Picture 1 (cartoon, rainbow, N blue to C red):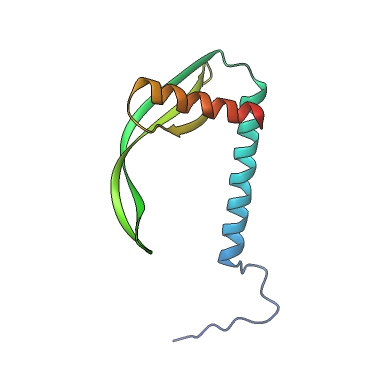
Picture 2: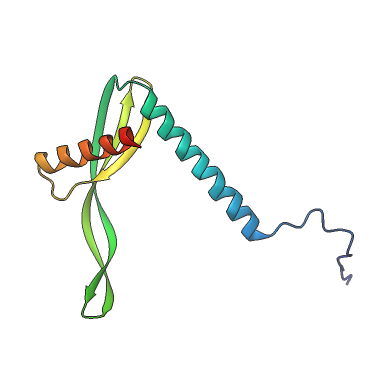
Length: 114
């Protein structure tokens, strides 16, 4: 059985796992920023949204402790058509039409103001 030892000069192919994570996060942030710029400067020709009820993990505070709990939340994905450009997603307080409208308008105002 042969045992491999790494020599000091042979570090060119060794990559730290955290470095990969940092680069991935940097790329995700750059992509998110470019998407926000695209959405804020391009006119909305058609705003489409679709909702889905998901099980979401939340922390409920009782006294001074937090307890995990799973709740159902409605998430709405916003898409600009005709090119299917992802704008973002929102969560409404309730499933009613007024709450959904307010959540979408608040989100769009936030994008325009920033």
